[in-house]
Length: 227
Figure 1: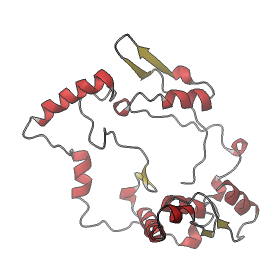
Figure 2: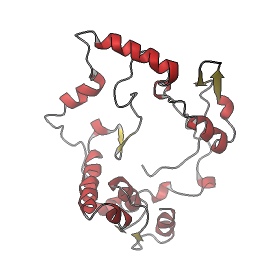
Figure 3: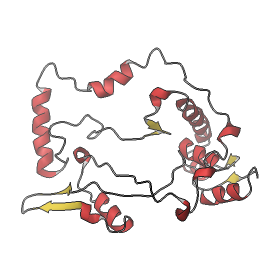
Figure 4: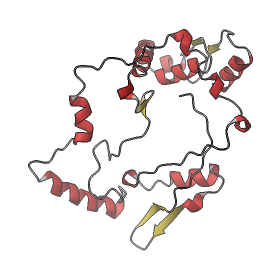
């Protein structure tokens, strides 16, 4: 994708065939936005079969349709812009500040058992059920779907070397303790790739339990995205 965007920026309008790494409709859309005019799908067909082409085609149509509706702005391609709080796909139960492992998981399971024993308890949760119940009738699109020609290269002006990016814009990471599984990825990522801002995260431990706790939210990242 880096090579595609580099050619597209240097030679606007030059026909480019993107190859390597197209494993979803979302990836295909990113290649197009980076300047590709066509996308090759090879390994995905070998790993599955040729029906993935149909999947990617319908997926691209869905992604373009999502962009026409303001009520779907919480989606970034085929992913949530901000992942809703959940545990194993179910609404979080109990104290949201307690992580989902060890003795904390046991405490949450006891709380969940108490909640489920209530006959009036909504096991799905209105946060998840309301959007499903309100899907019909389908809202009218609020804008016109972009054509493929309008999509091609549409992100090129947002792609560049790190020194070309604004050093004034800060992105502060949001970490949801209720989905913590004590993997330590946030600590490792910030320490290795965040210029040693790991002092923002503290590790609380004792003889019987340990957990990672957010001490400060001053995580500063400078990045570029195709969306």
